[in-house]
Length: 257
Image 1 (cartoon, rainbow, N blue to C red):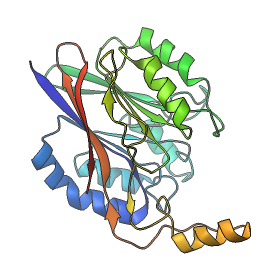
Image 2 (cartoon, rainbow, N blue to C red; image 1 turned 180 degrees about the vertical axis):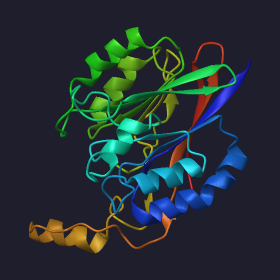
Image 3 (cartoon, one colour; image 1 turned 135 degrees about the vertical axis):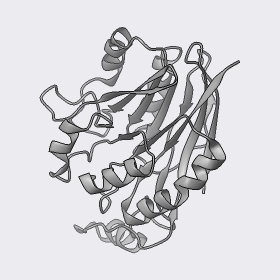
């Protein structure tokens, strides 16, 4: 059975996350031999958003596609870049007038992989119905090789979306909460699923932020400016092995470095 491999790395948070990814990528590529390499970069610029310079660094390091999320537009200079570069995508269920695209196609030796970024609505604002959007895409996308970064807060919404997509997607991987979950599985219809991939960011921290600042916020309820923790970066991601013939996943494995 001929297979190929997707390596996906979770939300890159600040300079510690960027440094960890750029340092480790050559080793990860050598060890895992991914056919496609995708990363979520929506927190890579000081914890919120992404800049053209950072995106260029990631592409130069061998990343095939960058997905984003609810912080896609925090750095305003990225907006023209999103219009010019088809390999960096924001959630597809933003309104049609929103800059950028939510879908890109990657090609390798006859395999066409559709990569889709999509946002959840529970505890998050600005996104249209992700379930209806998935059904629309299911009719539109011709290739059976379909990788979804579902950027959402609520675990229940992510799990439900996984079942909704089962048999119609190669993989549904959750991002946004920055905490890697231990529920990776192949769903009955052949879709690889995990509730959250985790982050590439500083450890120890509170989801990438300085824990002392977060503690102050919780203990006082006073407005606080969050800052990325000045700690070494940890890398979290998943490897998904896929059948070339039909786009069904045969294996998903968490990685943490």
